[in-house]
Length: 122
Image (cartoon, rainbow, N blue to C red; front, side, top):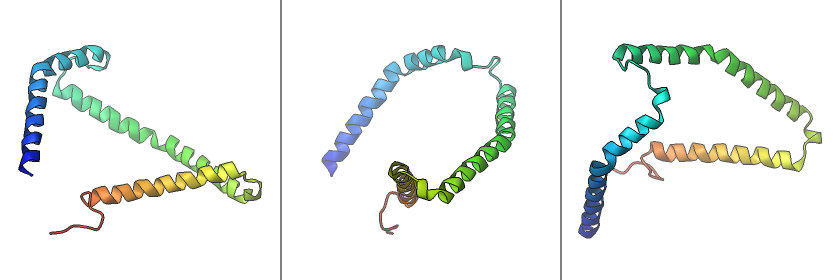
């Protein structure tokens, strides 16, 4: 166990040295590549304005998203009514989608419990 701790400390030290040596170069390069997204002047007021714009833009998009949701729901209802005409491929895709949703739910539960499979052990 002590050997693994030393190995982890060594790797952390190497990573910290790499970031110390190359971090500022990476930072400048990243800002240069994405300068079209930078708002001038970079003030707190500008950040607050952008934050409010994002929030209210998201609020304004809710009616469009709910309309899309109802269209999707109508499609599913129609497919269920005509399930006799359903192809095996479509049923397989639906089953895989349901399985994927269940798997993400299970993964979220495991993460929520702190990456334990049977719960918290004090």
